[in-house]
Amino acid sequence: MKSRYIASLSLAIMFIGFIVTRWWLPENDWTMLLESGFEAGLVGGIADWFAVTALFRHPFGIPIPHTSLLLKNRDKIVNSLISAMETELLNKESISRKLKELKLFKGIASAIVGLLSRRSVRVGVLRFAQSSIEQVPLEKLSVKIQELAVDYVRKQDIVPIVDKLTDKFAYDGWDEKALDFVLEQGKEWVKKRETEQFFGRLAHSKMEEMQVGGFMGFAVQAFVGFMSPEKLGPIIQGMLLSSIKELSIPGNPNRQKLLDEVKRHALALSANEELMAQLKNWLQTSTESVQLERFIHLRLEELRQLLLDKLEDECLNGGRVLVRGFRFLTEAAKGKEELLDRWEQSILSFMVNWIEKNHYRIGLLVRDNLNKMDDQALVSMLEQKIGNDLQWIRVNGAVCGFIVGVILYFF
Image (cartoon, rainbow, N blue to C red):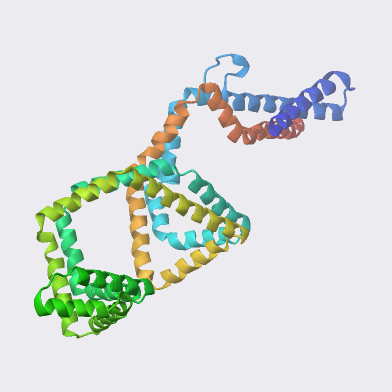
């Protein structure tokens, strides 16, 4: 502690000066003048040393009355410190007033802008995100997701769900979309060469199997003999394509009849209790299967790898995605000032209420920390904080004593 050395040096100078002027130098007016100054400076320095030391400990370890004042008045000092913090330095009113004046979101936004302007910070955030994603235990996560799905299916009544799906299917035009999809796929299949040959062989074989007697049987046999599978295939194919084309025309009566029949059966699904029971049982069995857990795990692995690849690309790009994302948020927030103000006031009000309810904990925390310190640690802390300034009292005492001693010599 530099000031302590200076104070001790000033006292040593006064002591040496007194010894030298008292016994070593020849006696004359100048020597007596200096002797008087050094003598008074020595007395002042010793007195101030005693006073400063008495604040922290007993001088020379002797329990002189009214010394070691800080330790003797430890409780008073702690209480005064806590009282000063609670009522003067960190009182509830001043904290609440400062919080209410705080522009929370603007301050946060300014801090984020400052951070995102540095490439190292952006890359660091992305690297942290990468490491966090890599540490996610996908095995446990996939099992948890499956458990949630099983629990949801077990507790859920599927009849209202089926009702909503069928209503949407029937009244939102999905029935027509489904029919058009089926007709389009059917048309593509019917147009194939192998489909044409299949229909020709099938029709020819069935006609040969027909057992019809009389004139009708003769006519059928004549027709079968005349029509080969190669001739029957294109005929049947053309008939099917024509029917598909007819059913694809909006407003066609046959199309409307087909749609009405599809709607009727769809809307009646939820009323079929046996079918609903089978459906729920199938859902439970499917969600409890090992295959579903493996499927979820594989999808999570794919998602994680996709995220890691994207983050790696952004790291190589300097993390500019964070800047773009923050810019997007600020642009989106510009039209919602009132909402943000309400959020900010709600947060600040919560903080103010929390501080008002827990303000007493500041004193408890200070008291608890001080009680954990023994006497020696407390004295060391106080000496480090205020001891340097107190040592200058000793220097001032020695210097002022010297000056007063010189002045008193003239009287």
